[in-house]
Amino acid sequence: MTNGGKPRLDEVMRRIGFALIPLLLTGSLPGQTPAWEELASRYSITPGIPYVRAAGEESKLDVFAPQAPAGAVPAPVVLYIHGGGWTGGDKNSAVLRLLPYLRKGWGVVNINYRLGAAPAAVEDCRCALKWLVRNAPKFRLDASKIVITGDSAGSHLALVTGFLTKAAEFDANCPEGEDPRAAAIVNWFGATDVRDLTQGPNRRPFAMRWLEGVPKPDELARRMSPLEHVRAGLPAVFTVHGDEDGVVPHEHATRLHRALDAAQVPNRLLTLRGGGHGGFRGEEMVQAFAAISEFLATQGIR
Image (spheres, rainbow, N blue to C red):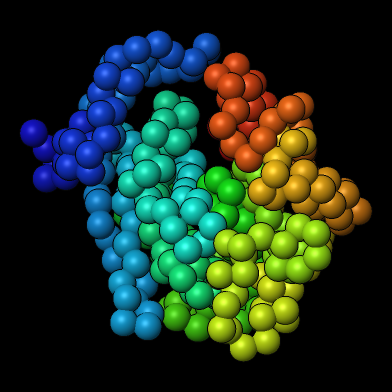
């Protein structure tokens, strides 16, 4: 069945191969509405929307829009960027990570981007943010309340997407227009210094693959590092990072938040003691999302 000609949430989940409905019918997070059982009927989904074409490749996104009567207040919206070391992963693998935001009644835009050599992912994510700002009213989403998030490489991309301006020259494939602005960024153990992952004791093979063969890799790594773009007036940032992360060192989070403090950017760092690169326990995830919701509420995003 469809709503207004658009697939319902349960149909889209079947289409992309995720058994979402059993999860929706079990349990709930404290203090949140609507019930899981209602969720499928409260959203319309538009999958597979092309938002940029570059280097012969078309990148697409899915929009999860809360259904609301005409005249209703537009909903906050999350721009979700999947992880995978910049060279792997897919938006469909991230669908269950969208649930806490859908549970709040927010919109979600879940994107794919070009994998492989840098800086393709950064360029596409900038275009996705611009697309969202332009198209938010069409889906009754509030372009002034955009939260960018992802996990791992997706959170690096969330940070750099929200921190960059068009002066950084990653927007060449995007339509002309004003610099898009996010209201907040939720960073799940994302890299904040790409150069640190390409040289020295923290060198990682996946980071080297991303920059392999590109001109001036060290300079490009610097330009794609969120720490290089910290300044006053940035979106608020909430970071979740395990202090035993063996992939992206916890120091990436602490350095970022020291820099944000110095620039007087609203921010919070939640360190999960003994936590690695994701794979957090259920109670830690509940704790994290409660803290995220509280922080975003202080920024007027509810």
